[in-house]
Length: 339
Ligand code: 13P
Image (cartoon, rainbow, N blue to C red; front, side):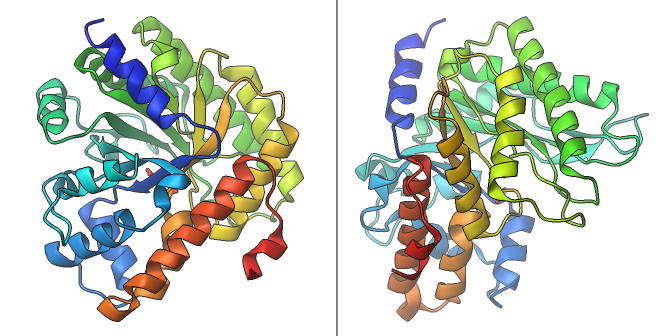
């Protein structure tokens, strides 16, 4: 592999005890939805202001070691005229890029989805690398219903993730591999565990088939949870179910597992991460975050699109980053929310 040293350096810059990843890579329709909730119009300038706010938060680098950006953001500048990627790296936050092009239905496989974006990926990665990106992210999505995901859906999605990861490593970008089993629906935690286990097995089989070097990638999985329309689960139950699946499926060569928040509330996502780390002091991998909503939501609420609220928004982001840092160490307590 041509870029092995580069990949090793990126992994050691990203995988550090007590630091996680800030996902700020919402696509245009998704960020529009988030802005809608605070009555802000999603213009290019408003998106720049928001991402500038996040990544110029003073002190963020203490808790955050990487950030996933959207393509548009790589071209955007901070108020000081640096690129946003440069501003991130000023705090030793490694800039990365979401490279998939969203989902579509998988043909002849009702209910299954598949992610687009493999055509021309190597060329795109070279361009992103020139703009400062050192890692990439690709998300496959699995909805749960009575008959989905199908075996065909699970295999097809695993193949996509592995092909993407292989191209990334060949081009010198660390791949974040994200198979997200959604929490939408009324399924119980056992069903979520069963599907997540089947998905992870297929993903690691495919990664092996495509010769992806596990030491040089990061897994971004869902936690194992009951469906949103089912009962809620205690953090200890979530941690137990999540760790059981991970121990059965993820080889110890993988350096870091960075969970997505997937619609959990900010505090819920922190409490669950804390329980996972408390139960997993012997885990062979780092158990960290790659949260989008669970890091950004309170900051977005504080901002409301107003310049005079930017500092408060940054404080809200920093607070969630610090509390998740404590959760990565298993040292979080809910009473800290009021400090
Ligand atoms: P959430 O933490 O909001 O699920 O987002 C993470 C992400 O990057 C989804 O692809």
